[in-house]
View 1: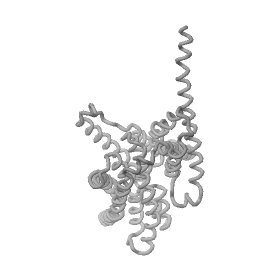
View 2: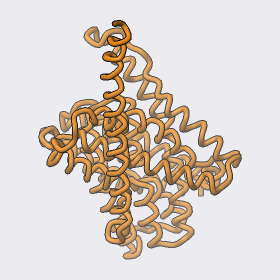
View 3: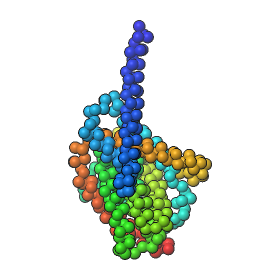
Length: 354
């Protein structure tokens, strides 16, 4: 009798596991199609990464065809949007090395720190105080502009444990203003509106454009030297993801401890950020063959695309409508700061250390 009961109790568990695996496989297949779509020249030429295509395609599916997916698969989608996301963000550290960051020296590091800190502060303040956004949406929008676009939004989403539609709004800001920078920055420089030398152009492009691919796309229209400097400065901003997440985790724990309804505050340590830092050190020590690092980075991009696709599937357009215009306005304020304030920071730092 007990054997029969055990068999019955195991059946739902097996069915749940199978449903989760099916959901993960579905997201993986969807992400594979997204990756192929992102490689189309018309899309790749705009500097739009598979991550961004993934959240847009996932959101279209999630709102138009979500009833076509069995309910049991939802656990797999959630796994991809949460746990797989943390692992993928950690492995993003293999794209950065301390040696590369050292190449741009004090000037590159100073520009990165000043841009990241100021943009996060201005974005959080403008989002919450001027646009009346909730804390999470304001922080996600600020993080996407300040650090490394969609990857930063993913990292912050994981730390804040916010709703998927808030990440979608932040990514929308990255897409719009980052793509705008790709075309306007080289145009302004080549037209003589920006009086920057090669170092200044590299510092400005790498210090203020949202996505890594967008930085490369914009700077490649200037010179190979400017592209090299801009890419390294951009990766310095990526490195700052770790300390920023630690500070944000501490801030969240303090705010929760001051709110009786939230219970006792716990320090929200983003362990995946520490994993990110560990892998930066591994990459800096060159203990992995270049072929292995390249393969891992390719798989990591695919895992991040899966996470973005899953977040898109969980996003509902009705939720975006409520705060969409205000989130976009916050992104516009940040973009104005990145252009004006970022240029002032670049010129000041270059004058100070040049």
